[in-house]
Length: 113
Image (cartoon, rainbow, N blue to C red):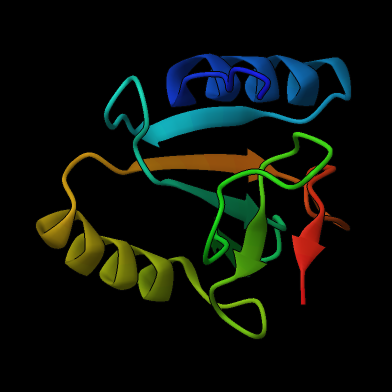
């Protein structure tokens, strides 16, 4: 079994990849270094946002990539994301929340249906 990256290292690598592509990204809430649940907000810079959540089951797929699902079916306002994540942080203070600006995509992340 291949060792997995800690959440902290994965987030830093992801943000660096976004930077190389010309996308701004930042940690909104820093969680547990080793294995905090990871949520990604995609800011489309038009007032709408996608929220990607950890996929149910294994955190990684067979190729070693992190697995994500859409947490909301359509892009929503930041206030909706903020309320949803505030509730989750109460239940799981170790979670991570990362925001990336991407007008037309999902910051290069594959999302399961």
